[in-house]
Length: 318
Image (cartoon, rainbow, N blue to C red; front, side, top):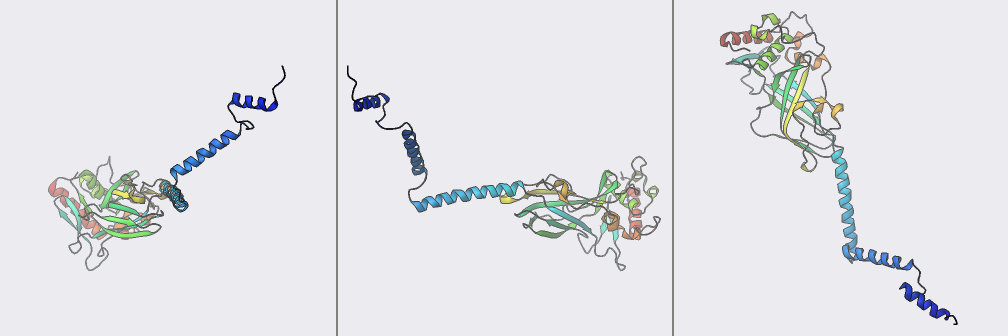
């Protein structure tokens, strides 16, 4: 039998493989991919070229915004606080020196002209690229009586009855001043020991204190410690918010060295005491520091006598 003509043989091969004669195996996938790409573009993007560019621009802007937001948020830093106790303006006045008064078992500053005679000056520095808002900030000033043991001096709590909102602008510093309550309830053990510690640090002999405040097992203060009397700050806020109102509220606690917490946006950070100028004695009894330790300033002597009177009359000192 004679062989079939070449063109007939090509037709048989094309029918057997279900492919057009003369086509290669790489042609069909390329046509299919092109059809799929065109279908996806037509399905999700408008046909109008201008509208299509607007859609692509919007998507790109959203992506850039999200990336910027994530970078700003995850690189956010805590505020840097500098705090200072400001005594009453009459503190060193010869015409009207500071006086102390009592109300039951409470010993406090007696200044009838100024409801809040002590102030706390606050400076907050914001290195972030967004504003930080602080709601109802409470600042408590304590001082080191013994190594590892801080006792209270004053607090801004209840200084204002209305809610307070502080806003620290982006890349700027913010300064304000708020009243501070300086008082001790001698019926409370911790507050009584805080007052006793202050008296000892300002020159009062511990043996002259009322017996409940002079416990040999728990001395009021260690005046020889290198950090004796250093002021320590404790902060608490109802809420702290940052970028787009996101929460960055630190837990209540002591002001830490800023470099140690700069990677934690929800932390209280700032300057730390390191010299005698950062001590409570520099605030309350600065005239005691440059003289021999047998000297007691007159207002400290009055405070010690008032403390003894309260303890003797009430019998509630702890």
